[in-house]
Image (cartoon, rainbow, N blue to C red; front, side, top):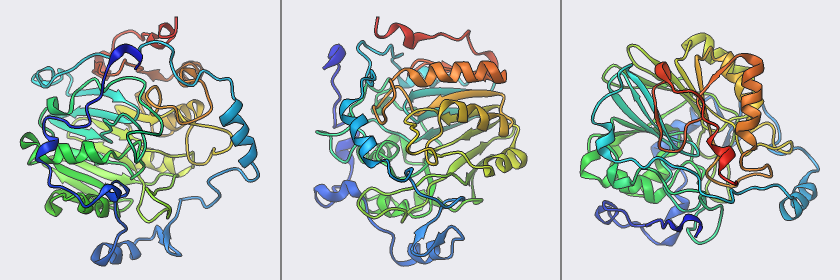
Length: 372
């Protein structure tokens, strides 16, 4: 294994989790009962499925064989040839709060630990070796998680943006919910995702499911689900659970997490209502011309950041898994070029590097040295 690191599927807290029924549990469960009744009342749920803000195909029509050729014969360097320089972390690193009141730690892909106005919020916790229902096959991590699950500091909230495997890791979330340190943590997600959590023996009292426009409150912190242009599903049937972008607002700071989304004009309405944002966390990787409506590319991320009236942009959804046909290090290069043209301030930290946007260090193009 590159760099010699090993990933332990069993964490120090995983053994305390109540067992689930069988190997198919990773696929989760379909919403039923009262949860399904609430889903049917959602304006986003029509014709038996959740719908996007703009209807349309997930893939550009007629591109299947083109995509297959690129998958099999593309020459892009889709995985790094050297070790990605992570910053190892432990719970002790989070004892002292950020001086500015706002600090973000990118842990890889879309997983971030956000410290905002005295609260800690973990978003899309993925610690698995693979972004897949199996730990034996599927896209494999480029680097180990910089913060072991057993070293997570006490969290106030965990946000699950949607139910795809590279955003919702069953083993990780079950380990976190069972940790004695996290017994007060509230789990906040989009409509329907709670059915998966219920299958995985989550306490129902700790899970809040939101429709677009709904908010949850933890003290003076508000977390609001907002529209996104994407899809959902962990098995064959799609769009039985909702996907969302997220506004996290404290008394002094505001942050935005895109989840997975393609471009649509409605993102500007989020900026008008909830902005300006001190920090936007927006996906920039796993894009392609064959699926432009569900994944932003780097130029689209810069455009969305400006629409949101963001001050600082932290790119997500790159540098951890091979999920598309582009080179693994193409997203940050395209982002830097687009940000320079638009005069957008960016943070591109190493995985595990804690950064306060108000006092961010000079940009380090660390990815350029990985394959040398």
